[in-house]
Amino acid sequence: MSSARIQPLPPEVVERIAAGEVIERPASVVRELLDNALDAGATSVRVELRDGGCRLIRVADDGAGIPPDELPLACQPHTTSKIATLGDLGAVATLGFRGEALASIAAVAAFELSSAASDDGLAHTIALLPGKPQERTVAARSRGTTATVHDLFQSIPARRALLRGPRAEAQRALGVVRAYALARPDVNFTLVLDGQLALQTPGGSVDEAVAAIYGADLSRRALPLGVVTADSAVLGGVVGPRGVTFTTREHVVLAVNGRVVANRALLTAAATGYGPLLRKGRHPLLVATLSLPPAAVDANIHPAKAEVLLADEPEIARLLREAVHAALGRAAESVAAHSSPPTAPHFTRPLQLALPAPRTRRGLLLGERRRRYHAAPAPLAETLPSGPLSLAALCQFDDALILARTPAGDLYLVDQHRAHERVLYERLSASREGVHRTPLHGGSAQIPGQYLLDPVLVELTPRQAAILTPRLEELASLGIDCQPFGGSVFLVRALPALATAGPVETPHDVAGALTREAAEDADDWLEHVRIALACRTAIKRGQTLAPSEQRALLADLCGAAVPAICPHGSPILLRYSREYLTHAFEW
Ligand code: ADP
Ligand code: MG
Figure 1 (tube, rainbow, N blue to C red):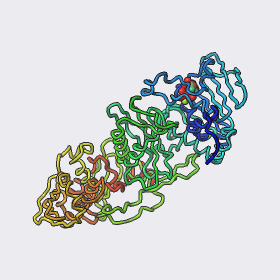
Figure 2 (cartoon, rainbow, N blue to C red):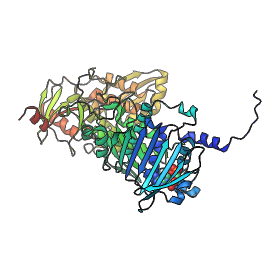
Figure 3 (cartoon, rainbow, N blue to C red):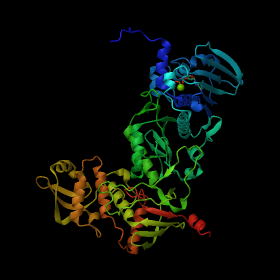
Figure 4 (cartoon, rainbow, N blue to C red):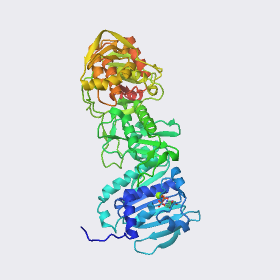
C-alpha cells in the first residue's frame, strides 16, 4: 500500500492532462488550427512545419480574424465564439466548438497568436511562453490569423517521447492537410515542410484538388461519385480508378459538412460498395463529401472530434454504398489507358496498381476457369462514356468473347459468360429490391418458377435444415420452390425459368447447389444464392452463339445498371477507344 496522501492536482497539471486528449502530436495541432481557419471562413490556408512539427507549426489563414481585445480570451480554456448555450450544441455547423483547442495547445507548447480582424493592416500578436508573462506586439498584416506553435511538448518529456521521428510526424501532418484539401477543395491549401513545398491545391473543384495531389493522370481516370440526394442529405465526391489501391486507409476521406471525420459505418459502406474489387487489406482512393443538417450530426462523442455520430446512419451508409458501386460499375477496363503508374511528388509509398485477385470463396468461381490476373502492366480503368452504353455485335471470338463496336467507333471485347451473368444477376436482384431495378427489367415483381419434370430431393444436415426453413418464402420469390420433405430432406419442385434455358447443368445439380447455398449460415446468403444462380445458369465460355443471340445479350448488357463488372468483381468489358486505335496505328 502506498502511503501517499490523496491530494488535488495543481490546475496546470490538470490542464496538461486534458490537453493530451486533444493534442497528441503535431498532426492533431494542425487539425485543430485548420478547423479554426476554416471556421473563420478562410479561402486560403498555409501550413508550415519544421522537423515534422516538433520544432515549429505555423498555420496562417485569410479568415475573419480575432479582434485585439479577444485575443487573450481565445487562448483560455472553454472560451469560444461558436456556442453560447447548451442548446446550441445540437446545431453546431462549425468545426470547433469546445473552446479548448488553443488553450490545450498553449498548455503544451510556446504559442503565438497573431490576428488582424479589420482591414486597417494591423495585426495584434499575443505570445504565451511557458513560465513567462504574456507579450503583446503589433505588426503589419492583412486580414486573417496566424497561429504559431514552437517546440511542442518540450516541457513534457514523457509526451515528447511518444512522438515518432520528424519524418513520420510530417507524414501524418501531410495526411491531415491532404484530407482537408480534398474535403474542402474550394479552399486553397499550401503545405511547406522544412522549407519545401509539399502540397498545394488551387482552391476549386474536387477534380482540381485530386489532380493537384495525385497528379493529372489519376485525376482524369477518377470516377465522379455523382451527386445523390436523399431527404436532406447530399452526397458527392470522387472514387479513384479501380485498381488503384493503397495499403493504408489514409486516402479514404469522409467529410461531413466540410469536416473530415471517421465513421465506422460509412467506411464499411464504402468498402462494401467496392465489393470484391477491393482485396483484403487494400484501401481505395475515395473522397466522399456529405452535407447534412447540423442537427443530424453529433460530433461531440470523440475528444479529437474525429468520430461523428449521424442520425439515420444506415440510410446514409446505403447511399454511399450505392453511389460507390454505381460509379465503379461505369468503369471499363481500358487498353487505351495503359500508362505508367501515377507519380505524385508527395508519395513516400509507391502507388500500387492491381486488379482484384480472383475470389475463391465457395461457389464463386463456378463456371469460371480459375486464373490469376498477373499480367503486367495491369490495365487501368477508364470511365465509360457517359450516357447509355450502345454496343453492336460484330462477331464471336473463340466462343468466348463477343467483339462489338459503338456508334463512335470504339472497339469492345465482351466476355460472354460474365456479361450474361451480370444480366441474370440484375434480373434476380430487381425481383426483390426496387433499388437495383434497371430500365431493362422494369421492376418485374417476381422471378417465375418453372416446374421440374422430376422434382429433386436434397438432403441437408439438421443444422442446415433449421437455417433453411425460415428462408423458403424468400427463395420462392426467386422462383425456387423448395418444400420440407420430412426430417432434413427438402424437395425442390421448381427452379427459376431462367435456370432451365440453355445447355446448363442438370436441374439436379442446380437445385442441390442452390439449396445448400441458401442453407448457409451467413447474413448475405440471398446474395450468394443470386450470384450462384446467375453464374450457374449463364451462357458459358465455349458456347457458340448465333448472331441474334449475340445481339440480344449485348442489348441486355447495355441496359444493365453495372455493365462493366460481373457479380464476382471481374471485368466484363475491354475497351479500345477510337482514340487509342488512331494513336496506336499512327493513322
Ligand atoms: P473553438 O474552435 O472550439 O471555439 P478554440 O480554442 O479552437 O476553440 O478557439 C477559440 C476561439 O478563438 C474560437 O471560438 C474563435 O473565436 C477564435 N479563433 C481561433 N482561431 C481562429 C482563427 N484562425 N480565425 C479566427 N478566429 C479564431
Ligand atoms: Mg477550434
